[in-house]
Amino acid sequence: MSNTMTHRQSELLLNRLEALSSGPTRQHLPDGLRGIEKESLRVTRDGMIAFTPHPRALGSALTHPSLTTDYSEALIELITPAEPDASLTLERLDDLHRYVYASLGDEMLWNESMPGLLPADDEIPIADYGTSNIGRLKTVYRRGLAHRYGRTMQCIAGIHYNYSLHEEVWRRLHADEGSTATLVDYQSERYLAQIRNFRRRSWLLMYLFGASPALDTRFLRGKPHKLDAFDADTLYRPYATSLRMSDLGYSNTTAQAALHVDYNTLSGYLDALSTAVSEPYPPYEAIGTHRDGEWIQINTNVLQIENEFYSTIRPKRITYSGERPLHALASRGVQYIEVRCLDIDPFEPTGIALETARFIDAFLLACALDESPVLDCDAYKEANANFASVTMDGRKPGLTLMRDGQPVTLQAWADDLMADIETVGRRLDEIRGGDEHARAIAAQREKLADPERTPSARVLREMRENGQSFLAFALAHSEAHAAHFRANPPSAETMRAEQALAAKSLAEQAELEAKEAGSFDAFVAAYRAYTLNRFSV
Image 1 (spheres, rainbow, N blue to C red):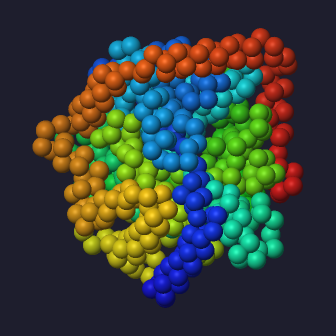
Image 2 (image 1 turned 180 degrees about the horizontal axis):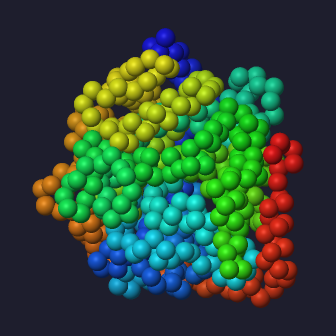
Image 3 (image 1 turned 30 degrees about the horizontal axis):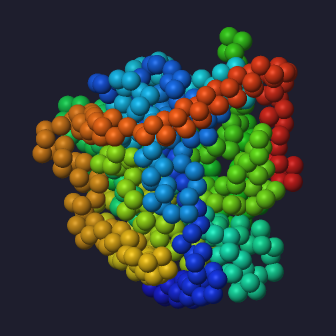
């Protein structure tokens, strides 16, 4: 059954690829847009999370388009604009790092997904977005996360890869396939099909790019675990690829563990998420929304807001000011996808290599163009189990996964997937000229042939060879990357432009705080009432 399905899928992929490679669509096939959001903890020279405020030189975390914070005041997020080529995306990410380092003083960015030294859980600083109602709401949401999951968990960092196909690609497929759906609905359907394929296949990304096989013992705060001792200060799994994405992260949290999200239709997805943000959860009701007269969470529902859903991938749509993500999707359809499972690459100064981005582009395009069966309950569970297995034991010799209810070795399935990805990569190279995608894919083939080439294996090997703990390893690489960026500061022109952008964002925050009227309680009430009436909640 599985082999037949794989062959049929590949045939459809080839047909679509052929159709899109002719006529005016051809030049648009590689275009699309991709952007990166990279999280990094600010740390002191010993690897301890910084307790200083977000540097004023970086502007306002509330209003700056490219430099903000995530959970913690110390967790910087660098956001690139959407670009038609991955090389431009990586250039912009590099520029942002240079500017950040020009503004950090003695601090540096922790270039690892798992944190280094942390204080007691309740001493980890929560991000502060000022006194405006929206700023206060963002902070209250983070207080809620602290009560639900603990602050330590929120210090895990990663890379989000945003990706879209050029709209001409969707128009061509819509016409060729004689779809009776509107173009907007067709595009949403196809992005969800891409997401379903991603969910089935994303274990491959964990094998190839997972880079968190070890962590500092103190991170677990004495909680039970299934890890081995690497040394006195480090826990690991010998064949792990990404402990960040394992059940040590968010995938097994109480309320979210039971959350089955529908990726088969947009209305089903919206329905599941709108229910989760509207349905009370008894343990969170027990926490309440106030303590000592202060807001401590937005509400007591399964999710406070849509973004609390910790999925490996999300359908997205750019929102208008004040608009909730679910409303944007409901009114205007899916515009792009956000891949959320990539670890920071500790061997790369920016946390991601161009080679990685090229492979991901080909991988995602293959997911978009291939047949994509419905992800029913069994398939959903199977995908989750495969993903979890690879995060914990991905490099284990002979590891077996389940494909369509049948056992298959990781290697055999990976070979099938790589054949399709290679076909896509060759076509992208033919159109653009050059061989960048082919080389990027060949490099991943080498990792499949030799697991020791994977970043997770490289991390453990370097730690062993140098007699390093996880903390010492991560500190050494973070220091090296800091030295790299400090030795290559931004140009005077870039500095002026970034300083102007920072000043503008600070002025925007100040203006927002000065003119805003209405109480915070009323603001929260209005926000909570802002529900998707067209869907059941």
